[in-house]
Amino acid sequence: MSEEKSLNFIEEIIEEDLKSGKYESILTRFPPEPNGYLHIGHSKSICLNFGLGIKYGGKTNLRFDDTNPVTEDTEYVDSIKEDIKWLGFTWANEFYASDYFEQLYGFAVKLIEKGLAYVDDSSSEEIAKQKGTPTQPGVRNQYSERSVEENLQLFADMRAGKYKDGEKVLRAKIDMTSPNMHLRDPLLYRIKHAHHHRTGDAWCIYPMYDFAHGQSDSIEKITHSICTLEFIPHRPLYDWCIEKLEIFPSKQYEFARLNLNYTVMSKRKLLQLVNDKHVTGWDDPRMPTISGLRRRGYTPESIRDFAERVGVAKRDNLIEFSLLEFCVREHLNKIAFRRMVVFNPIKVIITNYPEGQTETLHSENNPEDTTTGTRSLPFSREILIEADDFMEVAPKKYFRLAPGQMVRLKSAYIIKCDEVVKNEDGSIAAIHCSYIPESKSGSDTSGISVKGTLHWVNAADAVEVEVREYDRLFRVENPASEEGDFKEYINPNSLTVVKGYAEPAIQTATLTDRFQFLRKGYYCLDKDSTADKFIFNRTVTLKDAWAKEVKKG
Image 1 (cartoon, rainbow, N blue to C red):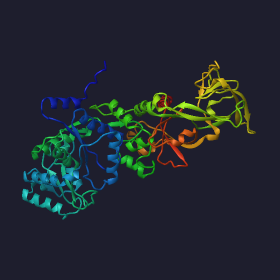
Image 2 (image 1 turned 90 degrees about the horizontal axis):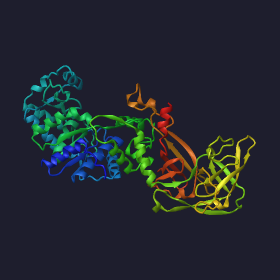
Image 3 (image 1 turned 90 degrees about the vertical axis):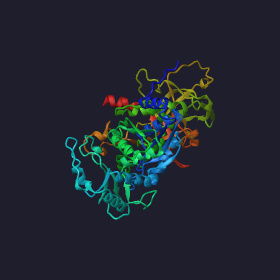
Image 4 (image 1 turned 180 degrees about the horizontal axis):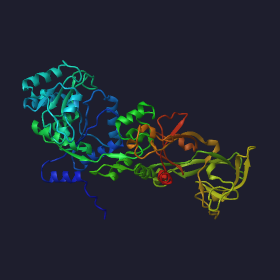
């Protein structure tokens, strides 16, 4: 019997709401700000919002919170849409907060008419001072006494472009003594003479996020507005606006955001890494962005699995990067094509193999999935193996190649090391071996048992590839909490480029293929590759090597 998974607290709320008849169906939304690329933290929110819609037969809107024209760009809009589709989700409607600018303006006018909003001429410094502190109440200024008529006129003049940026703001009139700073007459509108990526120059006043957010939810009739924990103190304002405007009562619920160790999750910090050229772009495979993870070879399935395992909690915590790596290893093991690639080659000459002869051997593409079939491997007298797989003076229990010792070549034959040929400087020129003709994989009649199996490539057909070995972007667990500039903690070894020699089958690799380089790790083809140059990114090592390093440290 399969173990039934317990509901998270949001699912409990939804089930109760549907059972009680409060809603016939649910409608959630994912509301990104188009001011950067999405990261792994957003993937949790995407999986949650869209997942709830799917689970309860409801729908999910994609709404761009585009209320700050200065930081927004259509490049970000396009990348966000691509990321959501790649993760495997489809939105019911595509909306923009800017679609509602006229309605939001009307809502602000309604609050003024009710005597619940006023135009303030104070500077931002003065407003901050008048707000008081968490332990001291704030004080209202003389502008809060303006009449409804005067406020309506001034607000219309703000819209008409009669004032400069920062000259006036519209504030809600709530409670300057509230223990919640967000209720101390919060800003609703500010003046920004800036070109908007969708509305052009039609507006020079823009709603604040706290004002646009709840009302946009309400306009769309969102039943469950799911936010991260930092929005808890904003909820009373969300509710106040909806109540005073007497509009559809969307409800906000908060869950813990996803924080991952050895990286940063702030869009502002990620933008700094891009602008200061610490990475090659938003999709650099070291970045925690969804596009970076995609380029590194992560699969949508592994990220959805990760979001599921992390779960929905009410308390912030730091999640281990190694959990994300575990999820991708689990999936790639099932789907990755196996290929042999030698990084640090040493030549092996099989002296008793006929000169000039090449035979075709066969090896499975994926032992986990027999439907993927086999591939051809050329084999001849000269092959390449890893230098690390040979030792002249081998300790006991060394099962790789050493003088007088035997090993199996993967999907080929058993070979025995007979002689080491050296260059003048003492370095190894080649290893002379003999092979056992009766020991061919799949039809071995030799009766010889060996403990070691090595990967190899045929020297004459080896394809040269560039391999980018990626590691943690930062060398400390929580760079954002360290003293000084977070960029000082960038891991100098986050990228190592090595040359590899691959079996010929690698030449058919496409950008969507996933590979396990035998005994190395999981890799994918990078978009920088050309017909003449194959470049591979390491997605993840075969085992969690980082945990060992941390223990050693």
